Length: 345
Image (cartoon, rainbow, N blue to C red; front, side, top):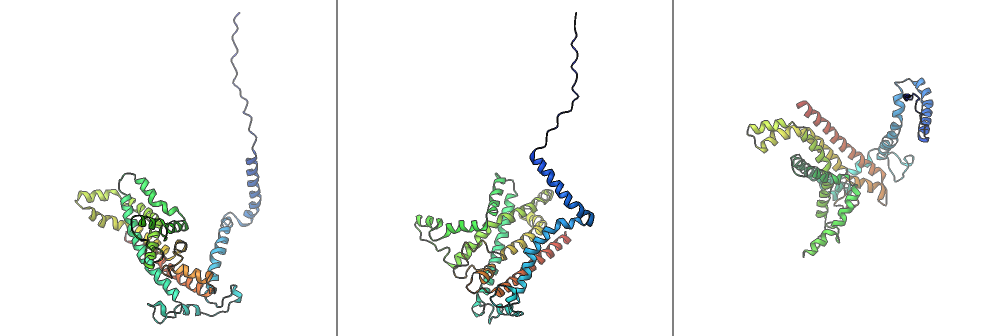
């Protein structure tokens, strides 16, 4: 007698749910706690006003570390004495600013009461003009080269951007090790039969190397911005110009430069602001020397308020207010030039 096997019935039992692990229990408990705390507050304020609750921590941090120091700095700029606490400082009006501008001849720092301040102003002016000009030219040239179809283009883009990732202090210490009297570069020069060059002991050499190192360290950032601007230019424009027989220089002058001008404006003003604020790269490298050859405005403010034997907080605050006005002017110029470029386009 044949027996047919009964067909296997498909199991309809649901899978056993996995028990939540410790992390899930902890997370659920945290979410439940937040919900219990925020629900009454939401009922009290309403849904739309809850946004201010989430913004409040950032506003507190901004107020404590940005707004409050600015107010204190203004109060120090209009008060005197060497006391630290504002309550111990008498109001003297604009005497600190008058002291900074007390000069017989503004072109000769030796005739100024605060001669180091004016040396820092002149050093900063020369540094900004030379460094920014060189920076923009080198960044534009590099961006144009990296925008072409060349071998290992991605590799070279990374190489030029790599110094931006380094700390300014690390950059300064590396180059100081290379350029000091017993450094690597002088060792190479001596091995080739030359004599040691006082790169960091000679004022002119020190100024040149501060500019070169700052360009080397920051150029990749501005190259990246200009490269993005170049890639935003439609390639059809260059193809049409080529069909019309335009040379490479004509295409650059009539297509690249006009369309890249808004990006160039941003790069120029950002480079100006960063150059005015130069500090962290110079102090470990030359410490403002030799003498005051590489002392710039931020270092003057820092030395006057914190490292000199007599700490003149009022003078340092007044100098920082003047520098803030310079930065505000540069920022305002950026906004106006950018807006003018957008209106023209």
